[in-house]
Image 1: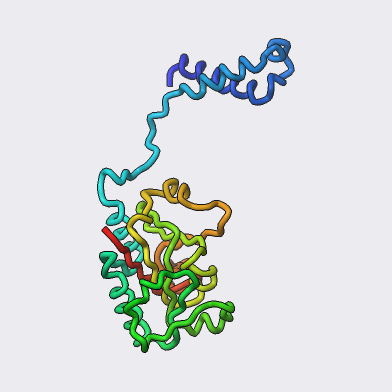
Image 2 (image 1 turned 90 degrees about the vertical axis):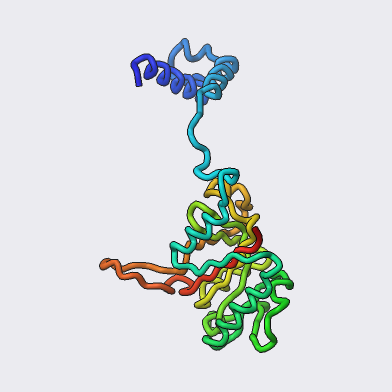
Length: 237
């Protein structure tokens, strides 16, 4: 940056400071500054060029849903894309296979769309969470099925806000298996895009793959702080 540019930037910063402090810098010239000076400083700041990238991924440039699928799979999640019409069949297939290998019911939070369970076989046990199940009961479940609030393509992350169809936080942290349905329209390009879709007053849980950690020798251990098995169904085009 040139000396002239340095001086200009310094002047702009000082003008903003004076405007923010009401000119209370202890000099007579500053004391004479008023609303007009503050407005001029704001206008000069707003006019600065801002040609930096505001997002790394533009949905118009490609399929961000496919990017989300790739990034989520990098975290060792099992990811499958299905048409909306085939969602119920896919849910039934995955949950039937899960309960064949693991005893216990599939947990279903309140508000989950009934259509998602329309093809679930009658021999697949299911349980609600009202009244709330104890930690021991949650731990004995074969798994849990939920929706989500949004998902982030850039990081392969799922975000729950624990609204309808998602359940309380313990419901998705204690069981060893979590099946999440992500609708294609819920996939955001990046973190700012995802956060703009969320209610900041709600609790949020960010899930990037199965729960895992590593010790000092970098030995990966899964299932420590949440489900050891994460399966994602992306519904829609």
